[in-house]
Image 1 (cartoon, rainbow, N blue to C red):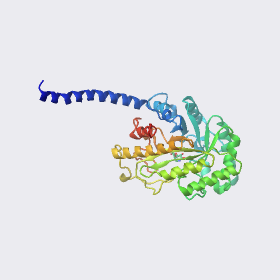
Image 2: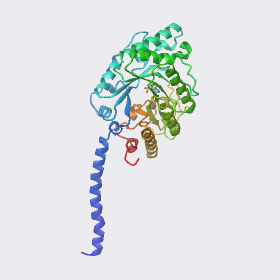
Image 3: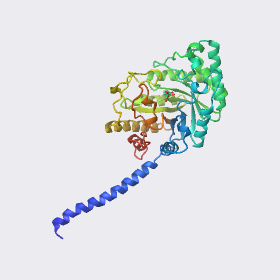
Image 4: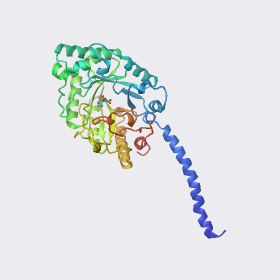
Length: 379
Ligand code: XIL
């Protein structure tokens, strides 16, 4: 054999072998990847939750249902257990959707977090202009007793009070504060404890990783505990932006909250990739802004660089969660996939955002794989 052709042939053969090989490797990898499951990967660490809407809990087959079943072991109703939907008219309750949600989550072995008993947003219409003190008090007591009582033993936990704090740590000027006074939060937990002795009770808020608001949350938790009332955990919502995830504050918060003897959870995690027109991080649903094209830079797809930055941010977060796996009990993503995210319509209507771990076709994103990587040996 002529050495020249022999030498030429060698790379050709090696190339061919490698090519066959790499396609096999790729096949194996993608098979493995499509079987990869968040809930299984983190089974020994914390629950992996998602927010579900009323369409999703009616599904009996399809890719979305598969994703829900395969990836998540905890569920929070995105809207359907909010007061507006549970009690649309004065003392008239509608439990059908909530019951369906509970049946769905139970069937799929998901822990259920009820969301939320007392919250200033998405209140029933009749409460929005309510000024009568007795009526507010009556609503407050009866809503908690009725709803928490009905679902005791059926939901695992409740966000008893949601978003009661201002950014400076003081109490938000809500209808409950104005009418009932500053003890209303302790009262809400007391009522929930009586009505739902078998249900864990949580305080939930956004930005409570930030030092001033965190201090407010700590004071609030201490006050509940000092009154001899049960509070089992605190939920940091986790609506953040890629490039501005407050890692240090998050770590400090996990330490500070868990030092109070309560569970720490990340309850509404999503990482927006779009410009924030509101100036400063917030998840206050009543704050909105008008659409313009600059605010919607990626209507046709997420650029690779953004995809990578988001994946990196998610991986860093999960590494931190793993570092505190003794303290952190649940990570809930606020939605199953990008197409469902509330961030497509808030704070600006009609944008295309990409904040979650699965894309609009239900396909795992780079961020999904990097989240799994946070768990791999050596990390
Ligand atoms: C959002 C839902 O995702 C939307 O569908 C709805 O229109 C508004 O509320 N903090 C919370 C959640 O506690 O209940 C909010 O959910 C997001 C901010």
